[in-house]
Length: 189
Image (cartoon, rainbow, N blue to C red; front, top):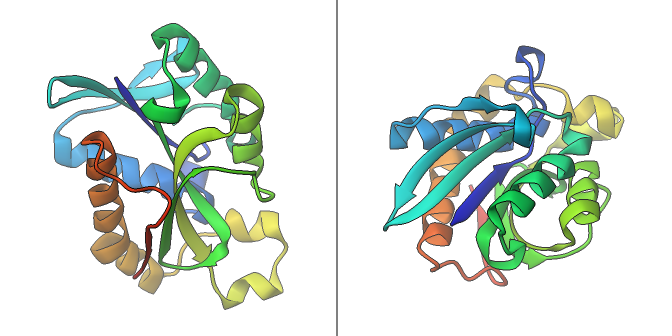
């Protein structure tokens, strides 16, 4: 079983914000797979299910705030007896990477990302990550919280839709097929 776990905040007020780019990726992926999300309060998440090569896959959008997503991940890991090191891919924004840069990694520190800090506290730091760069020049004029909760510009949203999200979905497909080399992948849109 595989778990694709997107970082983001629930609620319409966070739609298309930088912090919710993980939700944008997983929403688009679910739509292309023709699966819909349903509320699963037991797991503190909205979840869509699909099958890939005979293996069950859960697409997960936590319903906790971004900084508390580890609670949802812990509930899923415990219930399904998952091994985070092989069964989970977390998709999240990265303030340190330039907009459009994608990086994968196997594990690591939270690098100041409170959602990753929550995940690390609840399921340890050994899980695959797809980091999506959100940094741009506007960042220099705003504090971190305001910046990550700001919306993408129209041009950025177009780049996301046309280039970045499709590339992220290719990476998700590689992960699901156990074909993703996590330590060496970097892509810039």
